[in-house]
Image (cartoon, rainbow, N blue to C red; front, side, top):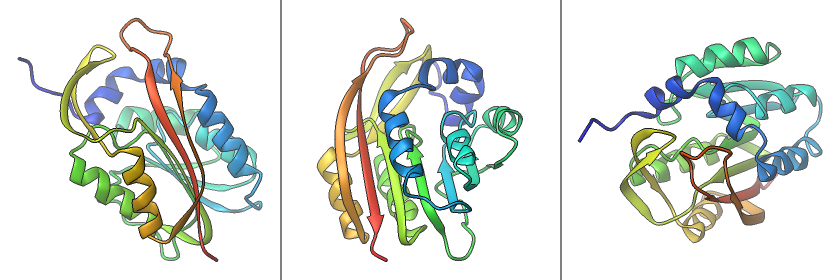
Length: 209
């Protein structure tokens, strides 16, 4: 069996193709509309797993936010800097990223945690919750499931994925001081034969002011 690829390797290889297939996930667009309606101009927002910068960072910049995007893929960071010049993008890993003092008025996390081990998923969720400032919002999406170290082929790449169940996501956010305001699941089918239908969990939360 060939070596399983890291998230950086997979997304370096996908490049623009990822935006073509996953740049208009309806639940993600709805989440961004919900969030931007609640943020004042100049709000500090972190986009974890920023990819090409679209749609998340682009929508946030359009809404007048001060946006920082982080991604493990250098190719994605380069694309994002070209596509969304109004935001800052860094090559960084959510597991080791050091946020600025005071955290962020909002943290977005759209599907960045899957290609890691399950304890790392839980720890990354805790870290992102801690970066959400009082009164701030945390908006996330993932593929839920009590999954640890599952070997799959995704978009032509062999990867090992992990996740948490919907219940564990909700409980963990609540335990970290975030009020879950809304959550739902939806099925998305990418327009590519190499990717099957995916169940997506969307969650909107807020830290008590």
